[in-house]
Image (cartoon, rainbow, N blue to C red):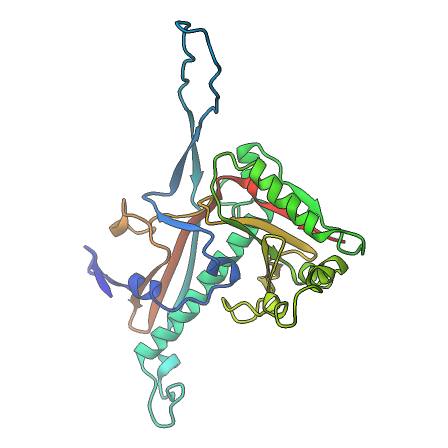
Length: 336
């Protein structure tokens, strides 16, 4: 904890470091580690897009002028970082004459109440990040529900269209492995210099069930000896309940649930994204505090101050924008 003092005599306890080291309870999207995180100074992040023209050599008559190299071209893109905040309070009544949680004879304490509030605040921040990253993957949109910054869609920003593939898993004659090959082939053809080491499919439960029970998939694994097929349908250990299935060079991961009434993955959809790549990024801006002007942004901030001796106010905030620098490599699969 850091105490920040101000000229008017007020003090604020900075619990940012403690908040950021609490155990995370993030969802599947965050725990996959797809997004590289970076703190920036200010409320705008600048991204430089560099384009290099590919070329090949051709033979010429000796003494003839050689081919001449061309410079790279670059374009600076600036994206505003939305601001999100959430406050909570610790009141005397929260701990006065109350038994400590899990204890038969110990009274509750301010420290214990603070930890409970911090855990709740962190859970709200984690849910926000999970929803925001899922929204970027499924739509290409930056999460900013109140439109406090200009709308930003990365397909529009980079002038590309999203590839969509109908897996048609309701038809028994469909070759599911060929659909996966279409995903991988399109990714290779449109990488534009991006590197990756594999692909995963973030699948809705409906898509996942139709895939693993499809006739062409069951036929493919009918030739495996007993015991070899089951590991391909194990529960994924990241969050305890998600299923995973490897088929045709792609690892399919079931993503269940919704946040604030919005499904993370729409019904009957599957979104294919590269792994081992740096195309997904999260930029964190600095806190909205005078004492932290021109400092590198943290993932979350938490400040505490006493209000008139009758409450402690907990002020939390996060300032972030998610980005995808090769949106064409996020491919939507769907079925009826």
